[in-house]
Every structure is written in C-alpha cells, then in structure tokens.
Image (tube, rainbow, N blue to C red; front, side, top):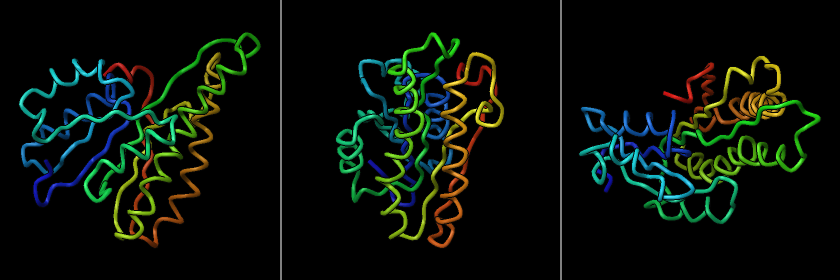
Length: 194
C-alpha cells in the first residue's frame, strides 16, 4: 500500500543483481520516501529479494509479475497499479550474449534485442503518456559501459546497448517540456553481480 507522499518506483528485472539491490535499497529508505514495485518474469524467483527486503516486504516493497517482452504483461502490470501512477520507472531487465558473432544464431540475437531494446521501449511507451499528462516523472534506463565502447565477443550485447544510447539521447530532449526526466546509468564490468 502506497502511503501519501511516497513516490511509486517500478523496477524491472528484480530477481537478482542490480535490480534486486536497487529494489531493496529504495524500499529500506529510512525516510520511507518510496514504494517499490519490484518486478520479475517468474515470482518463483522471489526468495532472494524477499529475504533481502526483510521487514520492508509488504510495506514499502511489493512484487509484480512482468515480462518486458510481452505487450500484454506490461499492460497488465501497469494497469494493476492504482491510477497507473508510476513516478519513477527503472528499466533494469536485460540479458547478455557472449561469443563470436558467426556462431550465434540470429534467433538468439533477436532475444537480446527483444529484451534489451524493445523491452525498454515497451515499458517507456506504457508509462510515458501518464507521466506527460501529470507533467512529471523520471525514467531511468540501466544500460552498460558497453553502450559506449564495444568489447570483444560481446558484439550483439554491445549493439543492443548502443541502440539504447541513441534512443535515450533523442527521447530525453523530447520529454523535457513535459517535466519528465530520462536518465541512463552505464555500469561497468561485474556490476550485475552486486
């Protein structure tokens, strides 16, 4: 339940890594400024998050099923939030792919782009109109340092992150007149293991 004055923060990809840590950190904010909706494709993977959240679970942290690769799942998740009100969207869900490009099937490459690019776009498209109407909000995209510089055998992953760099740079300017901020975080190696 969201308390008056709390910002609603929706985070994708919270079953592990950066998403899990961000959800717990914000939910345990001593001033209780945030109500975190931590999402994941499969709630069977919630145990680490629930354990890390401790007393915050059920108070300042709630869980929701969300598959960023599914239009229906995204719509259901957002429609399940009171008044569709999301103050902060943190696009964290992502997948990697390592190997020589000639050995990777195109279908595997498409999965990376579906999650890392179209999953982010799908989420933004769903919350952005409401943020624009309210004339406020913050969209955060967790990218990678590989969106700035490619790394050997990470060609497809780097390409997906470069795509998000261009998308976000363009969209950020358009959102300014609606008082909606778009930020990008580009963690370096090993950050996903946080």
